[in-house]
Image (cartoon, rainbow, N blue to C red; front, top):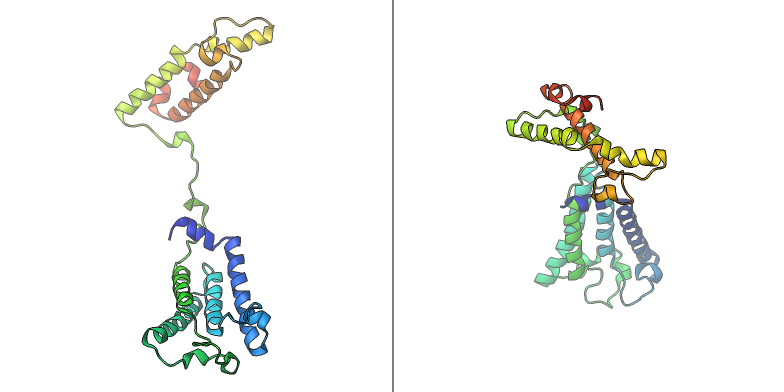
Length: 245
């Protein structure tokens, strides 16, 4: 089962649905001994929810509510009970067996108005099998230890050892410190502080109303470069400006 499915089984929405299903099944079962049409048929006399169907649904609802909460033996027992009900009913349909099993619950109340009073229909049996299969899927437990989760880490915990990558890193640092002119990156800020028009600006962002944007990226890049090289041989080889950042 996909991770999203596991998450759904443990969500509050799923628990609410399982609880509603279980309560509805209980009401249906209560309608048979009491003779309440409103309960056993939800007000529809010709289409009652048969007691065996309601019992299988109740077993599955409780099993689903217990998913991921332990009680594995009880869950398996409940699922097995629902599957046994559906399997027996389906066998009666396939082999045209007598309807003795159908009258195990509330035989006096079932009457003879139906060909198979009390028996789950083939469609109901199929739905029971599908739901039972879903209930058997173990829910993925949440990580109890934060160490098991993905965590951010400092760049100084990673060292570049590959010669090719070290060369690329050195070129990046040279570009940041030597190729890019920090005075030109600061030109807009200096102009604003003195109330003058900025000159000697870089193009692109720096020539538009969002000038200063590039400096933020430059500062982040230099800080990351220093953090990456800190404590390694590369730190001593870096320009003095970077080591003072």
